[in-house]
View (cartoon, rainbow, N blue to C red):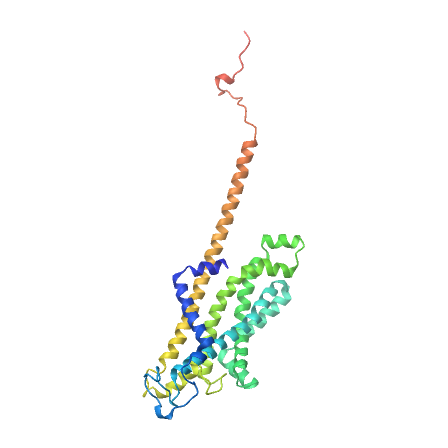
Length: 319
């Protein structure tokens, strides 16, 4: 939470969050605010330019481009969120538990992750759709499986650095359970790293979803998506050279805002960690200094016995 509050103070992060908030609103309510039915065809206005009736013109079937863009935002964004949710579920939990698996379990988990990382996104998604059927959920499940190694490695790396911390060992000595230590001491420290990875994964997932729908994988036409609109517009660039601009701009703005937010969160996390370490070092130094001062005050005052004693400290000889 401290990392998130620190990131909110950065003006660039606020701009990125504003863009993402608008995209989220379009994803949730775009179908409701669409001016017309995105599937309705108007053969009298095929490849029409922008006008009062159609603010962004019509496509090669006379369908309203603005309505299709608003409705397609929900399918594109929610598909990417579904893929990242699957990836986080398959990657974060095993990544946390892998620090407690032992050497054999950790070795097997790492080898499985390495095997998944060698598979290309698009080819694996095409193979999964061919086996499970051409549906959005099947494609997103395949994409989530391929994104899960990213969450696994990041979570495991962050948890390994915390597993042997002094407060974790102290909790173990006091009888705390493994689950309680993971939930209270380790998960809270790992959460900012997971948040940064989630933002990056959403950007990657959105680009991959657009690529798959551009190829016609995952969504059955005539359902509108950003990638599907790009694919259909490329065949009519001679008549409408501006047609690919609206979906392309939405994709670039959303992906850019996600990557920018991830960078700001990463910087805030590093700054917060450095500040915490500096505070701990300062507190330790202050405790050490106060302890030394207390010992100096409690020590007896030394008595001078050498030849350089002051005159009033000398004992006079009897006459």
